[in-house]
Image (cartoon, one colour):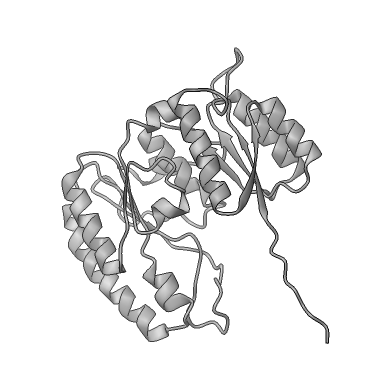
Length: 271
């Protein structure tokens, strides 16, 4: 009898952050993230400069993803230039590798970030001011309404996981449809509460069509719906080239960009 064994490939990440070896709060945060990733069985290679990061990329072909401090030491150069050089170097060798930029901490630290649902877990707590876990999408929308009433500024980032876990993966078409109807009703009640400078974005990180034979992610295009008092009605943003366009737009709104990828559509939608 032939015994089959499946060996899980361990993910390997490269983190490039010049604060890693320092005793600063930023250095502590970076090292905490390293430990979080290792706790999730991700092997982390550390580099404290763009040059060290480039050397690792050249010598280690097993790197699966890259995390880069967007404010790498300037060395007398313009803001973000060292990070840009590193990204260009990596992309020239491998244009498919996922890259995550760690935002400018000084500016980002002043912005309240409330993570609702599984967002805190997805980002290993990085950049999160307050994490609120939920038991259902209804609970998630309740939390959204509470935070909208409590905060005078900031970023509320919510994941309604029931669409994916409860209905999409289980091919529950009727359940998915009913959940859409419930969300529509909650959305209709929420829209009148948007203040003059609020922006609401409804989108997804992947598709999970419950009508497909597979229970996996269908990976079709995702929606991008935007509303707010300052948003032009009926504006068509078309099919975007990259999901990073939304990230670039948010970076412009909060003044923590520009980031390395994507095109902001803020000026396309605002009155």
